[in-house]
Length: 529
Image (cartoon, rainbow, N blue to C red; front, top):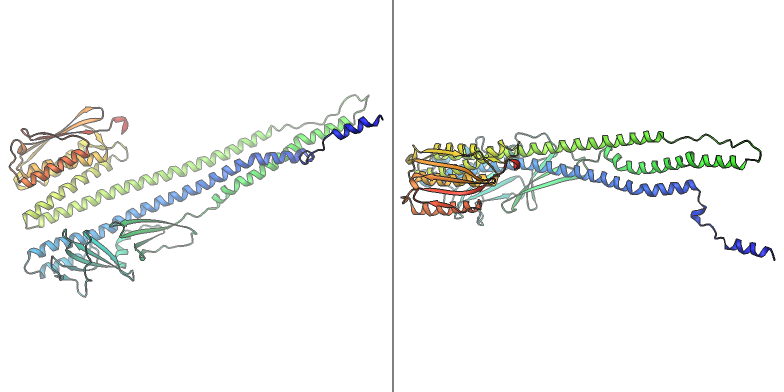
């Protein structure tokens, strides 16, 4: 009967679970592995995100290359279009088109124009000037556009149709693929990318890629004429380098290595000394003088290894930051290059308009060219001043902008306002590019209208009123009192300056007695620059 309580006590003791039966070292290895796994996953995700950022950077660089070649392509077609339209005006007034045709076709075949074959219609159903051996295709309907572009089915030619404002065809131009490729790729950029002109399923290759070893490819399109066709660039996606593969795999290797090191440390520095101490205690016998404890090693040296690990991580982060700074610097250079090319293109357009204005025998046509040139000059002045302030990011300085604009207006004044004087009283203020464009156009419109009405003196004043507001006033002596000008011209002038004032989000203040027009504009505070 005495054995019964012992048996029941043994039955009450629960059986050890599978986890309890595992060794302490194996338990520590499992705990360390599970604890470090999320860090490994986060590190892998960070490495993958870095690779994705590299691909996005390559996409931005591809868009920058595409922007440069779009400008070249547009300029190549625009030069010939200007020449054809100028010749069309001359053909309408000439009785004998032989000389005009010979000069125009010869000019179209010479640099900097893009070589090709051309046909000029000049308001007639049949072409009046045709390049030798060229049979122009039947003109397509304009669909309300001033030009249409068709890629041939064989993708070896590009046909351009030019229309006047009423939809009548002005001219037809045909370019061979080789000529377009040579013009667009000059000067050549030493990068491995492909250019293509795409219209539906028709693709005209303009520049092939030197290598196609990359597994992936980055594409960017620039559409023209409501998406009727597009210029496409194809660049090889940046390959995954050995360092990136190592960066992706290193978290997994580090996870395994850390778990193994943790298990070894627990075994060598904790469990093994405990077992040795346990053996010494088990061997202890009453009467022994003491315990012969084994020497214990301190793990303090691992702190140095941890510091080295942090040093490696710090160097890795510093290297990545240097790469990001280099990418930002390249992007800034690209933006400056784009602004510089826009400014140069506007200057080229203004020079062409000036040449056509001087070469026109019709005073009305010359005046129209001069009027367009003044507006292009105004926009070019804004871009030039914005480019000058781009490095400091202070906006556009109005004082040099208005001074240069006034000089251009005096230089292009018609004969009736040849002695016109412009007095400036401009405060040193900065504005955004949008405000600068509207201000330049507003001054150009008012001064030009005054010149056409026989102005002899113009005054432009800009005075600050509030920390972020200024008053711009333009006074023209010929606009004081009743204005003796073409009513249609006056009506158009009023509509234009009223619209520009709305763009500036300001009410137009008119003083008819003094011939003064004033608006309030928003300026940039010094700390915003």
